[in-house]
Length: 361
Image (cartoon, rainbow, N blue to C red; front, top):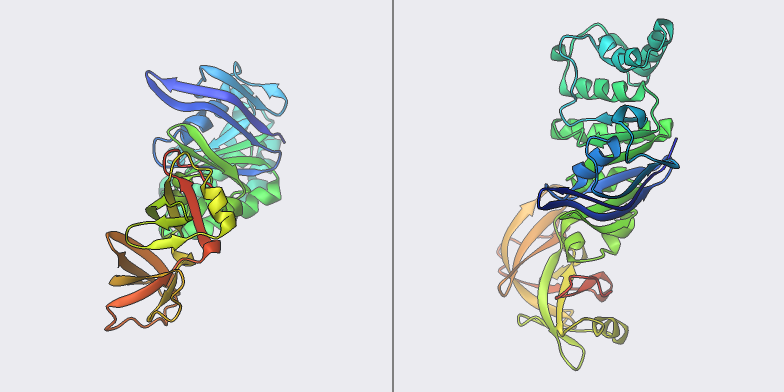
């Protein structure tokens, strides 16, 4: 198997910079997720590894080998596409066998490998069928099998679950992760779905406008976002943000409320490029009360609406001009309640520099 390394890689399409000086490493046997919104450069990065795109600057290594000038067929990678790209006129067996036939593998060996992979993916009973006779989940398994049968150094996956229904997607996430662990193949997986990224990746690389925003394990991405974009993109419901001014007496003034900062947090806030600070807090971190019993650090909010989800309930609250989301227990009764009190615990808040967007705490 092999690591994959980007060194200052830049790829342009005309005047558009798709990826900009990207430095990134997927270690041997690691499951790396490239996460970001549409157009952020994640698929372009994947295609550069595969050799389907050529970067203008920088180097890409697979293992210890520089692959910039290698043809796709010589890079020893296998790619699973969003569309599955199965040959409709071929049976499942022939779809799985096709890459081995191109590699001039003996027929006996092809038969052995195809049946071995079919057993691994539990599609042995489908080998005589054609893709049109398969469900979406079965087609996805065949596409995976076609990649696995080659025994490549690296798997490249471009949103392979996006065509599946929600229930099957959840099931296949676990299946894919377990399969990658069993095979021990370095995997680079592209998605715009932050739930997929959080549940599947050993590491997550978050991209925006072709620039790497953060590269960390999922737990750190969630608990220590590097900037406002990451804090808002990762997590559901998204992080609440408030524009504030840091006063001389270490109070964040958000106009709708004032938030006094402890000494250590205030010192971190003073590292900002100006007095303009963004206060962030995840909906799960907000404490909600029906009365102002806990007055310190509380502000009042009007109940806007509720979003029951069964296991939790999301409260949509109006704090002045801000619409704030808070997650509470489904047993939290809010009928006939107009006004609530909310508290932002200091250990749950994030502070960001308004000008740069970078994290201060």
